[in-house]
Amino acid sequence: MKKVLVTGFEPFDGDELNPSSVLLDWLKERTFDFEVYTAVLPVSFTSASEKLNAAIEKYNPSHVLLTGFAKNRTELTIERIGINWVDARIPDNDGYALKSQKIFQNSPDGLFSTLPIDQILNAANNAKCPTKISTSAGEYVCNHLLYTYLLHHKKVPGTFLHIPGADCHEIFFQGIGAIINCL
Ligand code: PCA
Image 1 (tube, rainbow, N blue to C red):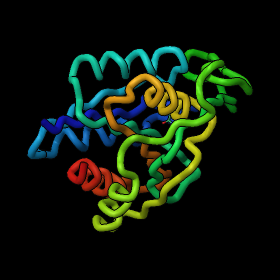
Image 2 (image 1 turned 180 degrees about the vertical axis):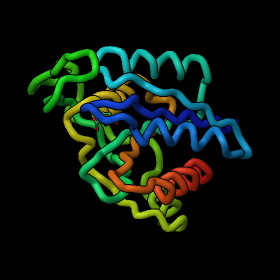
Image 3 (image 1 turned 120 degrees about the vertical axis):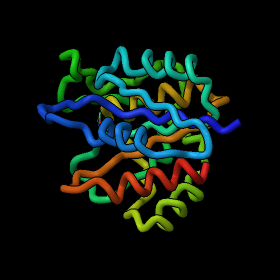
């Protein structure tokens, strides 16, 4: 049975809102023909993955869509890969900055997203949402979460979507709604 878990992040870097958690409120007001669960995650190297693991355990989803905010991007970006690397430009919300190091010493350098990226791109394009495939989720908490998730949850297909900076996020939320429907 199709059950989609969508996660977003709390605000960080002095912002009042994070569009990825606004997305979760937007989704709660919509109806789908299947279950859509949401979870807000802390911008924390130590507890984001723990909270995600707890949500996966609780909801037992068939698909996972992780989302976060990328202020400097102009399109919705579908992350093709998580890398085994972290180099925080700013501390996380716990005040902790992991610098220039592997996430896990003896794990692969990179792991590919396990959802069909091209199908997702098509669904977003059909919804007229400006969207691109990305090969870098950055070196901060979002990539850390994606890599850790891909390493530990090989049986639950998932990927990461970065929501760009924009005055109005509606078109990106519509695109993500279309992506959820296409899975
Ligand atoms: N964006 C950050 C972390 C939380 C978020 O929404 C990132 O791209 O790593």
